[in-house]
Structure formats: structure tokens, C-alpha cells
Amino acid sequence: MTKLKYGIIGWPVKHSRSPQMQMSAFQALNIDARYDLIPIKPECLATGIKELITKGYSGWNVTVPHKTNILPFLDETETTAKVCGSVNSVIVRDGKSFGYSTDGYGLQMSIKESFSIGIKGKTFLFWGSGGAATAVSAHFVNSGAEEIILVNRTLEKAQALKQKLQVVSTKTNVKIYHPSQISELASVTKTVDVIIQSTSVGLNTEDPISIPKELLIPSLNLVDMIYSETILLRAAKKLGCNAIDGKGMLLHQGAKSFEIWTEREAPVKVMRNALKS
Ligand code: ATR
Image (tube, rainbow, N blue to C red; front, side):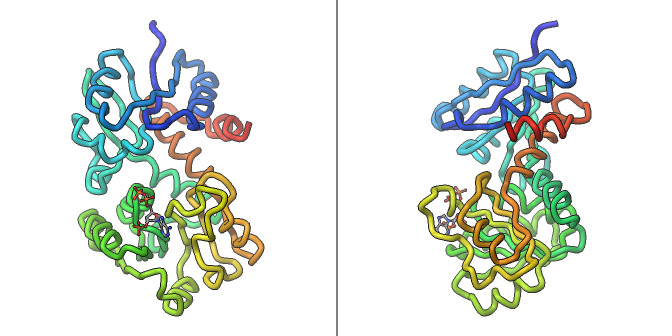
């Protein structure tokens, strides 16, 4: 049998940790496969995808800036991913491409693992309403979250995300705040189950803190979707919050992609160790 081909597309893509994680899983299960870093310029996305199919790729992950733009070039996309317009995993079956989003599942598992909190009936506050929040919040609505609170400096973007979420389900209550509404947010944060920092603030080490310290009360459950330890995480831990970075989400979204591709249970322990090394 020929070697199976998988990979990750993005621009840039060279910093991705997915190859080490996915290769460890293929090796652990004795699957003869490779996982490539595939840089594709935004303007070359359509041809890039055709090429992947011609070259016999069985599937691939999708990272920025292609998560939304890839949708028109796929044959089919899972409903939740389609509504929010975000795909991070593609599988090819009989030459046809199918898009999925496993980011929300990844975040769900990370929250469950670290805080023992499920989604159903719970309240989540997303700090930010850009691509990262969009990619995961639809899964939270789909999984029965009681309330989603969106906090964003550009209210129109939060409004647009709210509309998308309400297409997924009207059962989840969605509220919007501007980050300047500190006193309202101070009472809101006392009642939320988890705060999820989803802005890009903190990606650069010289960035200011993304969420004001006044809101970081002891015992608050906080996820910063950024993979490294941000100034927010350091402050939150000091103030007694239960705070985690985005590595757990990275692990579990990758595990789910692996399961979609192989239809086998992902060796999560092996993948976690590979990410650590
Ligand atoms: P994307 O393409 O994923 O939307 P982005 O433009 O970096 O990426 O924005 C991601 C999120 O970070 C958004 O919620 C954005 O807020 P706006 O919608 O108001 O632009 C937020 N964000 C980016 N820079 C920010 C900053 N300096 N302060 C506050 N929020 C910021």
C-alpha cells in the first residue's frame, strides 16, 4: 500500500506544531502516513486545493488565513462549520473534499479536562468576536450552552457572530458587551462558568493584557486560546484564577481530526507528549 498523505495548509505554516503531534499518532498506531507543512498563499488557495487532491492527499488541517476562505472550494461542509464559516479539517473521499471544524470540540475537551465543566446548561464568555471565537462558539451553541456572552471592541462584529450563532440554535441566549462596560462585566464575570480569551492580543510578547485585571477574580475559570503563556495567564494565575493556555485545545482538535481521517481512536496520551517535546 502506498504511504497515506496528510498535512496542514496555511500562510505562514512553518511554526505549526501539528506535524509532530499527528506523526506521533500515526506512528503509535502503525499507520504508514506522512504529514506535511503545506504553505499556500491566500491568492493560490483554489489551485492549491485542487493540487492536493490530484497529488492524492487523504486529508489536511487548515490554519490561518484559510479557515474561512476554503469553504467555497470544498465539495461539502458539515453544518455547524458552514454556518460559522470556519473549517480546520478536510477529508477526501472518492476525490471529493469534506470540511469539518474540530476547534470547538478541542476547546470543549480542554475545558472538561481542566475544569470538569461540560457545555450543556453552562455560560461562557468569549472575550473577542473574530475568527477564533467564530470557529469555536457555534459548537458551544450546538452542544446546548445556556448562554454565550460576546465582548468585543467592535460591536458590529459581535452582532454578526450573534446572528450566526442564532442560526445554529435559538435556544442559547447570546448577549453582547463592549469591553469598556467594566462595571456590568464585573458582575457578569461572577456568574459565568468559563471565560475564553479569543482575541489576538497577547500573541506578541509586548502586547498589553487583553482582559482587565479587575475582572480576574479568584477561582474564575479562564482559557486563553493563545498557545503560549501570555501576560493575561500570568496575571490570572497570580490573582487566583484557574487559568490555562490553548495547548489543550490544540491537542484535542488534532485528536478529533485524526479520528475523522482514520476512523480510529486517537492516541491522545502520545499526542500530548509529542506536543510537550
Ligand atoms: P480575525 O481575522 O480572526 O478576526 P483579528 O482581526 O486579529 O483576527 O481579530 C481577532 C479578535 O481580536 C477580534 O475580536 C478583534 O477585535 P475587533 O473585532 O474589534 O477588531 C480582537 N482584537 C485584535 N486586536 C485588538 C486590540 N488591540 N484590542 C482589542 N481587541 C483586539
